[in-house]
Length: 430
Image 1 (tube, rainbow, N blue to C red):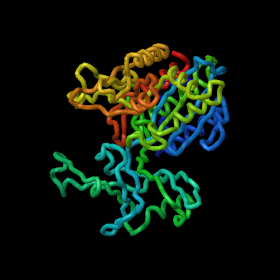
Image 2 (cartoon, one colour):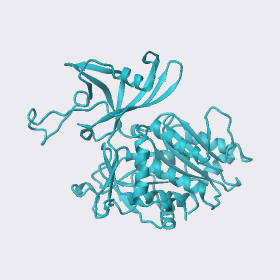
Image 3 (cartoon, rainbow, N blue to C red):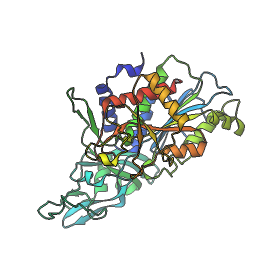
Image 4 (spheres, rainbow, N blue to C red):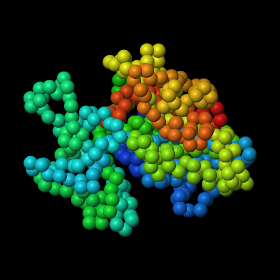
């Protein structure tokens, strides 16, 4: 009996829904992970501090978060078992000059972040959240309720919209927030108790304020609908698995690593992205605190390590079956996905597949394979970046999802819980 066994699919999805509600941006998600782990007894560290050597530790860097659990004994055969995900989601980011006035309306100036399904953002109740840094160097996390919307032109004024919708990212995706001339930054700062004159920089994003919903099927729990599931599904699943592992009596021989990077949706090439130094520096500091310090000890450690790259995957859309591979039809409720691609857009190989299937078998849950239609190239993940940077076995997996990158994405509660159970089985040695 583990911590995860106390959940039903619905209760797990409800807990996940609350996590989403509290995590409108990557910065909030990272802080929420750290808070939950410190409440469970993990010790929070800072990058700038000397390595503490804590057996259970957590560190936040901007919108990224990394945590670790050390084995009782670190030996020459010790490696790392890593689960990587990402905290960011497609959105709209506020520009430095955040407000403009057109025909009496005050509008919020935004630019596209990542690759959102743009039309899904129209006519929605949108809040603003993120971080503000003052000239004194103080960092504030802020979050508003609904303050703006992106109005769509009525069909009476453009009869062709239902047949051929073409919208400009600059002109049409321009939210309105006031019927008068008013500064949205002044409003945000006043709401957060910040002097607007002291603002040095911001990383502020639009988010959908609509609460999660669970419905569908005879039991009423086939569909979990919410924003930012790509990739908070994996952040939350790995967090819950990490907590379950910390509470188990099973001893592990490896260093267990939870890492949730930022900026995956824009290529990961940032200090807090998967191409940045957070994971490598943490692994090096862990090894250098042991008797195996130095490059030789570090690279032996890496050679005995593996990584699960956990990100969302595509369930088959019954209205567009021609976009899916005819021999691979992953569905909601069929279990988490093992993601494969011959062009190595996913890092999975046969060795990684075996690692995943052992964990799924140990967890007692089903899994499915996802392969793209040859005429529809797939996206990519942090998996190939991790495999290339470290040379360790890496496998790409994720929860099956409909409407990926929409403002409202759709998953299945049983799949969500199954994902956490497989990740837990991997960490305890499957």
